[in-house]
Amino acid sequence: MTTTTTLAQVYREHPIHLRDIIPLDFNSIRSVPDSHVWPISDDFSSDHQLMVPIIDLKDPNAVKLAGHACKTWGAFQVINHGIHLNLLEETKMKALREPAGATGYGLARISPFFPKYMWHEGFTIMDSPTDHARALWPTDNARFCDVIERYQKQMKVLAEKLTDLILESLAIFREDLNWDVGSPSTALQLNSYPPCPNPNRAMGLAPHTDTSFLTILYQGSISGLQIFKQGAGWISMLPVTGALVVNVGDLLHILTNARFPSVLHRAVLNQEGSHRVSVAYFYGLPIECSVSPLLKLLDSGENPRYRPVTVKEYVDIKSKYFEEPLTSIRI
Ligand SMILES: O=C(O)CCC(=O)C(=O)O
Ligand SMILES: [Fe+2]
Image (cartoon, rainbow, N blue to C red; front, top):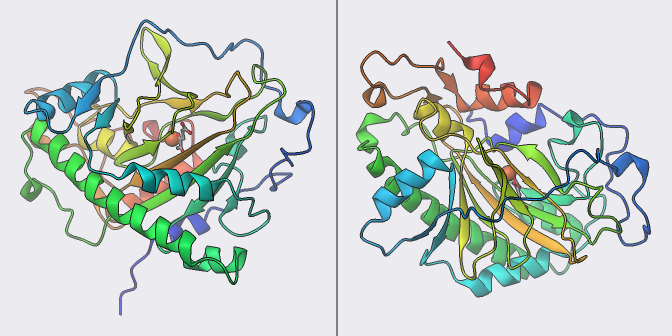
């Protein structure tokens, strides 16, 4: 009998090793401890002249616009996406709870790769939220689970719609792909960035790319997300009412032979001392799926840059070589 591995199982093979695994008690702290002070060389500012594209899913040109945004930015914001905003608001309120010490709650997965801690705490849900929720709130978890499950379902629909849009912009058909080897591997990450006494010296979430195919991020109305654009530096992804942010992830990067680059991004802290929360939905391909640059997309004389990897293998590689995961699969 073959057993299917899940994304959660693959991650469990890579536990986080850190001196302190419990985030700071952000409620009681009055100054930024040395463990959380980041180098002053980075002032966290952003070039405000540039604006990441906003795409209306009802726009007849949405396919072309999405393709262009993925290619030149690796990210865009999407409106008219059909997701009910009040659901997002509810999810946000639930994310504010303090489930200290329980499974699912903790430091960002990327923490061990940086010398300083981040001003952040998170809650990760893979598959069903019920086990975590029951442990946290034994008698009062039905509403939380309901909101999370509805949100996961809606995000999956939107992620599939966006995937079709992006594939269409590349003139790729699902038949060209070998994705029928299981269900998509997905994860939901609730991020919390508490008010910080010195937001210029602390980091919300350090620069990283997402291990997903694409990521859909809800960031409410408080800014903090920045994407890195070659030649321009860090650009703020300013919150747009009702919009969701879409990021190109590593798997889409590999599939397109880097035509759609996996976007480097980070979260800086709110300067006015607001508590920022965000909800990231990582949409990945089935765990056993093999990903490699699509030959159909290569120009004549262009060679595939990456060898084929399964999603599982790539998650393993990223857990070990955070800095250069794509380099380690280069041909
Ligand atoms: O909070 C944000 O704006 C970014 C979150 C993020 O990049 C992530 O969860 O991977
Ligand atoms: Fe991210």
